[in-house]
Length: 336
Image 1: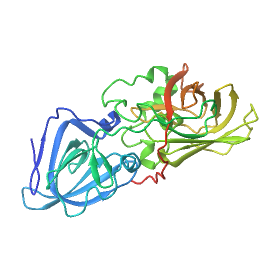
Image 2: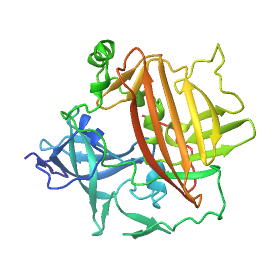
Image 3: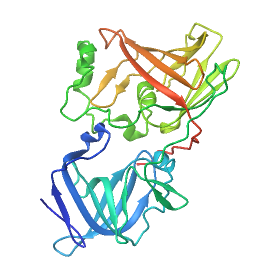
């Protein structure tokens, strides 16, 4: 164990820590960190908020710690604000250790001098800490059959990512060229999200941030809160143009089949379908998404297929489920 603090920092083994598994590439959930010090700054930003703590080392020198936590938008929907942690407050943080920087950690909970314990699961309302709050269900008008509105992934956004050192469960699909591209990819240093890239449609649909859909006569606009990504699905045609502007999210056309919106997309530049542990695709990638409303109109199932004649030897498929929500979309404003 090691420790720092006003000072004390301790390191040891965690019992239970909740975090998205892709954090394993940056933090070691098996090594706990306790930091006691003074709040310097609470950076309430996306994709990850940062709690900056000043602590005294064993030699009496001041050490500045940077502890990562959930993004501002998700926390804000639970009542958090940039005033949850205020500069000058005494604080003890329990977290887990960075793999790359001795003075970074991932936040699990904080004990404040006044006796409060603040965890990542807490909710706040009118400045009062809440626990166990449940969002109200959204009732859509009977007969609603279209997708315009704001949607939230059910059971999405945490706990289902890949673990460091675990199997790459989708690498089986890669051709020899795809395997070479994967071998050249570093999931820590080359992660496209570090450049505030939306990465891929699979990544956009796969997190816990909101999605807003707007339908017009000639297009469907899909605004993903994550990375402020916006996609235009062009209606009224089954053919892509011969020349398309380059876009990380490709060029999309779409049509309706009853209660299903079908989206066909090509024109992707080479990139990553999954950034952790890595699933590369070439510029031959083609995806087809099918959004099917339920009978009430208050939810839809997304299924997608991905094909790539250069990097894949077979189709990849996936499914996500979404429900209507009254939560408000916010600007993401990615900051690192």
